[in-house]
Image 1 (cartoon, rainbow, N blue to C red):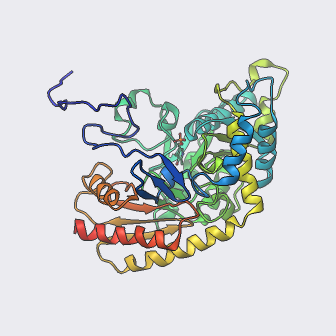
Image 2: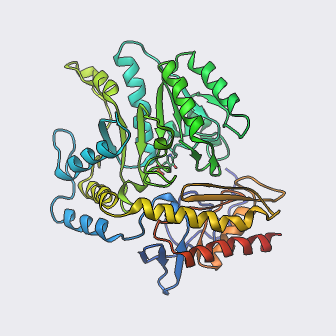
Amino acid sequence: MSRSDTPASRPASPIWHPFTQHALQGEMTPIVRGEGAYLYTPGGERIIDAIASWWVVTHGHRYAPIINAIKAQADQLDQVIFAGYTHPPAEALAAGLVAVTPEGLDHVFFSDSGSTCVEVALKMALGYWRNIGQPRNGIIVMEGSYHGDTIGTMSVGARGVFNAAYAPLLFDVAQVPFPEKGREDETLKALETLCAQEPAAFIVEPLILGSAGMKMYGPDILAAMKRICEAHGVLFIADEVMTGWGRTGTLFACEQAGVVPDIACYSKGLTGGSLPLAVTMCGHAIFDAHYSEDRTRTFFHSSSYTANPIACAAGHANLQVWRDEPVPERIATLQARQARHLERFRADARFDDVRQCGTITALDLKVSDAGYLADVGPRLRAFFAERNLLLRPLGNTIYVMPPYCVTEEDLDLIYGGIAAAADMIG
Ligand SMILES: *Cc1c(COP(=O)(O)O)cnc(C)c1O
């Protein structure tokens, strides 16, 4: 191993941060408190959390009904084995999820992260085919997708600099092109061809591909892709880890296309962004394929913290917030405000592809050197950080995905910052 380019001094902290090149990263910004759309440093500086702390916070940081539920549950039961045992917060949350998710998703499997719930979905799909006596193992994916950072989820996600080192461990998948505007037919034709080869499942991020750079496509395409899968009996897996919980304007993105996935993955906003929790939901067909007196048909999956009671209490409180508070109205307001702020950039020649999907907006800063590793990303991030804005561009794609409680004044600062960034780069 060559150590010639190892920087002279390592960070003082033993912590190895995610997606962080420590040799290039300056000091980590310490955060000691969160409230609503804001994060606070020890010195009392207020940072606007314009990306909802990596897409997880929906109603706001430390949202009272959720925090109160966490406190109350912590006084009752912190953790219990979930094989052979169950508990009220898990039962209440599961029943609530069946009620609010697309009709037909009747079974809930708990796990603890977006990656894990996608792994569970892939295992459910292959288990289904094997258990009904028609083994299938092919997986179809969409170009550019992101489904997590474990070996399985990297396998079904876009290949690139992020996973080049692990490529030998990744399994092969078939890929359809992203449905670019005007070229959607290519995606549908490719899906049709691949589905005819009898794969196990197609996995997709509905309406918007997050990590790919907030790439958006319409509900009609989502619906068409579902129809093709259905016609060929290919299981349709919707990865709603980012899109769920109001992000795309509706509670779940699939609603906009009238699509009921065979398997759906939810995490991030499931607890309002307060605690790690995930679920994989499926219909009777998949559950029944595993439901047998034959033990070899068991669904062999578990995490130590499956359905952690405190996380489940947070998830259940989130459902109650959705039931009792005007969350759809808040989202509609945020959506309209975001649209207004985007207007000023539509005529700005320095930006490309100004776009919006529900509460998420994105725009590409025209630069000669684009791509995730381009210099422009870190430069923009540093520029925003100086203005106490937490924005984390994906290469030259700047996007805004705030908690729903963000104010008009906050949005002024966010979009003012984006305009100023273009001045700085240009
Ligand atoms: C974030 C994300 C994941 C992975 O979730 P983690 O909790 O980070 O493991 C999977 N799929 C999509 C679409 C995501 O945005």
